Every structure is written in structure tokens, then in C-alpha cells.
Length: 246
Image (tube, rainbow, N blue to C red; front, top):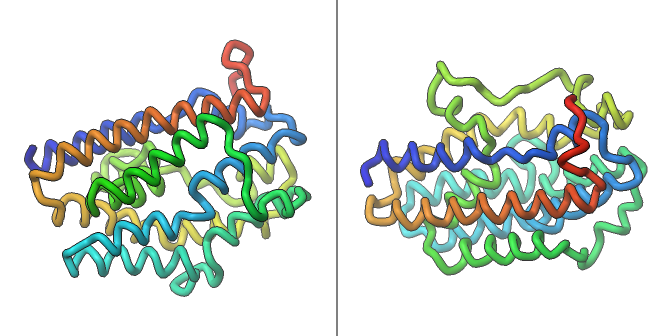
């Protein structure tokens, strides 16, 4: 698999990182009393431990150039020292805090839904037992990336939407204070650099013989993530046949 084929295979995965129920979350169709399920599952599956997952890629990587890119990302996620001022997992908790949720729910061990547990198990497997390239792809491309990754590589392709903070769905539909969008603000400061670095590492530094295994892992991540979001949607009362157009 050459570099271009590898890139296209990764982009093909990311362009399918879309879930049918997401419009319900961005248009206010999820009952406020159930919205905590979404935040708890996101936090427990990967947000809380993202620096750990990313760190696994770093410690396995034999290439100084790749380690430097991963280390910068890891430093920001773990400390917020480059832009955010606070660790990103802590900033995530400003969402439920701003919505008046009981933050004690996020302390200690959270119970994962079955599909969420299956996805987390796969994340652990892919970041510990399949080599640094797979760990880097799963964390910096799949977890941090969106369906708009092509726009990170091609200036003519659509970029991820960035509406004004006052138009954020949580602000519009759930009256979240704009000040609680600390993580959103942090991402807008650093994600451009993180996206460029992630793709640079994968496309320029991963050996060709590792490409097929990385793509297989990314396809498996997509399938597990879609099942995970199915489970969250069901727990939040979102039914596909009754979903209203936003």
C-alpha cells in the first residue's frame, strides 16, 4: 500500500464517522434529563483517559520525529500548558457542570453501557498490542478527528464547521453558558496544529508494511464506535424512525 492509498483508506474510514442519531443531540431532541448519559459515556470511554491512550503510542514509538509530535499533543491534553491552561479532561467537565449536572457522577468508576465497554476494550487493545502506528492512528486520527478530515489535507475540501460559540447546540437548546465551552475554545486554538501533526506522522513516518494493519484497526474502530453511539442513542431515548429533521 503506497502513501496515497494509505491516506485514502484512512480518509474513507473517517468520512463514515457519522452517526444517524447525532442530529438529535445537536437540535435539542434529547431530553435534558437524559443528556447526562451522553456525557458520562463519552467521559468514561475515552475523554478521561485520552492522555493515557495517546501516551501508549508515544512510549511504543521508536522514531524521535514521531515522538516529538506525539509528545506535544500529549503535553497539551494532559496539562493544557500550550493553550488551554488546564487538562482537557477537566475542561470537558465544564459541559455537565454548566448544565447543572451532579459532577459526583463523573468521579470514580462509571458504568459503561455494553457497547461502550466493547469499544473501550477495543481502544485498549489497539493502543497496547498492535504497535505504535496503530495506537497513533486510533488516538490522533480516529478519536481526535472528524468526518471532515479531508479538509485538513485538501484546501478545496469542506472544513469542519465552527459556528459562533453563541450558536453552539448546547447553548441554543440547553442554555449552557458560553463560558462553559472551555474545551471547545481550546480545541479551536490547537486542533489545526494537532490535525496537521497527526497526518504528518501517519503519512510520512509509518512504514508501508504497517499500513494494512492500521487500516484494519481503523475499520474496526469505526464499527465499534457506531455500535457505541447506537447504545447511547437508545439510552437517551432517541428512536431512529421518529427522529425529526433538525
